[in-house]
Image 1 (tube, rainbow, N blue to C red):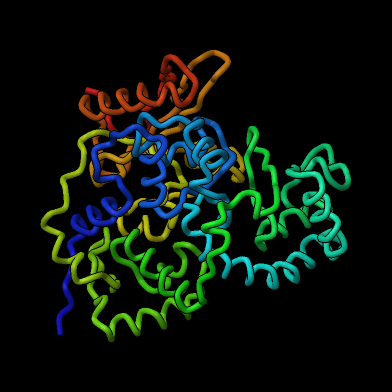
Image 2: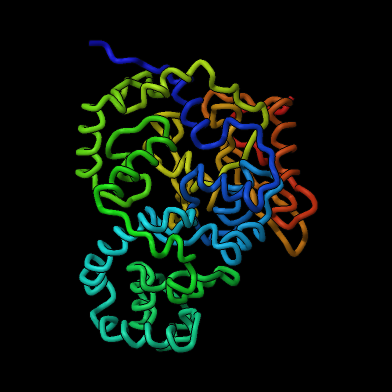
Length: 405
């Protein structure tokens, strides 16, 4: 039997619609509106790089231009509508999902105790109870307030002292939670002091967590392989997602289909029958251009982004400058359903200038006056988020392809 097949254009529209990038970017970007957006996305990855704005702020701004970083801090630190924990990386997650994270806590408790012994040494085992007592007795702490002094120049996570490792272990295993950040520094407190009781005291059986994780991931991807379902929240194993898919297929809750990749090749995926029926009703994409975080949920799976958009991306932070094809940290530009370019832009906050150093159009993209106008409009929108008041284009900023005109 021939499987239903989605054209590449339709697959892109469905995928971007599932990630709230087909909507007209509007809304207050705070309070209930912001909480609903994060719930729709599933989570927002947190990252410290701040050449333009932090990754989580860019993700939210791309969908809500009225958004400002203080809005997320209020939502997380005061309203407790979100909490910070681990998916595939550190992320802000709806607090309503907290009961499902207990499975991750339990699995990480055993896994990291042994794994981190090889990376950080076993000395942190002896610090676990001490650190927990310190937080219990004295309240929220950050890593510099406990244990040994860190080296003056950090070489990365591998130079954690035992108390810092114990602190992170207690967070990953659910005994502690991040109550707030100051700057980008995490403050840890007892989980029961951070998570509201209605979520803290709810327990979900493992089988229900697996079912929820797969359904919630499929809702937020539009279509996926079982491996992509497992990877979305990184709560469950690929084998568990594969088993769920087999049962859901047998019950008729999902079906197999094919999407057409950017290179024309078919790829078998799982999709809901009702999703296929609503494809004709997908909205047209907004005409505007949007700058995306490299960690945007639509792009963070690099292999999927290449298959679906023909967009190959790597962050070149750790690549020697002479070997970089692009800049230190460049941002994809989304126009409609297409990645049209990547741009090296950074905020010089002391001078109040957003500096565009280089832009590389994607293959086949002509950089005409219409695209230039849309780029300038997006950069102007970004000025308040970046803490700048004007944009400066460096000499020779347009690289490799395209001319303005």
